[in-house]
Image (cartoon, one colour):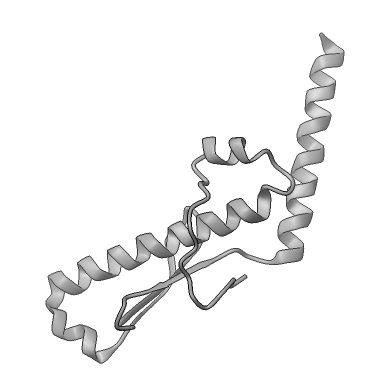
Length: 117
């Protein structure tokens, strides 16, 4: 039994090191999303709050409730894009099923500007 525990612990350490090295090489993973008219743009990280929110002067015409709803909608899309990118990055070193089980799902990255890391 001790050999099994030691093998499992070694495997966890190996995967942890591989993930750490992989993420260090690629830098932080972010997702970006914009409203169709470009009035609201959000950059987010996987599982975290938005890193930046840009609102154009035209977006202010939506009113406070409309603007808040639009920011939330775009932030959700940005975070989904970030999760997809994180999944694509880590699936090289971690079983993709494990990532999905952890809530890091691979969806469609609809960020037309390409990868932002």
